[in-house]
Length: 400
Image 1: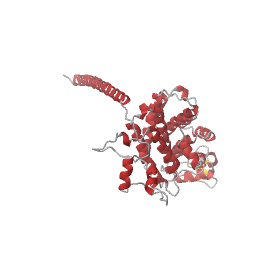
Image 2 (image 1 turned 60 degrees about the horizontal axis):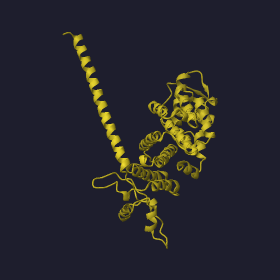
Image 3 (image 1 turned 60 degrees about the vertical axis):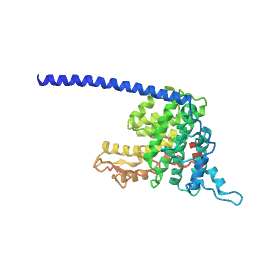
């Protein structure tokens, strides 16, 4: 038996083993899908219904109050006519806890009703988000933990099946808060916010929302609510601008008539412009988002501006690299999401490039240095978001 015959036999064995493995995987997938359907059917038949109508169950409040575990936001200032304990019971919010041995997390008495969950989210945004005298990272840790607890109660009660529209409203509020927190962390790099965990929770909520949109057939009766669902899909696209798999999944799953409506149509144009390295068109389309006041979409887009700006300068360093000629800086603000020539020269110098006294940039692929750059103050997108008041931001996060 020669070497050729041995190779042929090995290929045949590999071929049939591969078919066998594929068949086995298909059987396992079919079995698991049937099991999941059975679990969902049981969940629909016997859902757990929470009975707690306060933001924090009585048992948890008593335990945390006894062991001095109340957060400072949950402690009220005592007055002469009202005790601090009575006030604190109204301010206390259920904290997130992992399931442990011997602890029943599905006790209906400790699960808040769907309406109470929505009320809790509203309270966190309207009362805690801009708490006077508190730093944002302190506020973020509190709201992040309490939102996680809200989502935990919703999952245990299977609200995505029992009350999908209310669950959609809760998850949409969570996504808006996570995106806004990432924007604040970009403006203030000193904030102690774990962006990796924040991004992970954002993606989890967005994936669940897309499945729930698909579950209700992408049909929403109220035009205003449809507008905000379109904005959330646009946010999903902008946060994954460089991930082609996610973009393709959205293009396949979201119905075609949604793509013809704003702001999705503009966001798709921005993404295709960036894909083709046409940053001038991307800047023009972003101005449309500013003029139409697509605020949550702008906040999500602001998270990608620095990366796009860096990519544009890198492209120019390769296409216009020269030791003799230079490029006029006054032509670049419309390419780099900037407003003034001084911002352009400051940006290019921070990336290792040379600026002439006549405000011209000498692009060189050898001098270009890749590094994290601070967000430019002259960007129209950041200016538009910075002009929003606290009440307007609360309205954006808390909109149904």
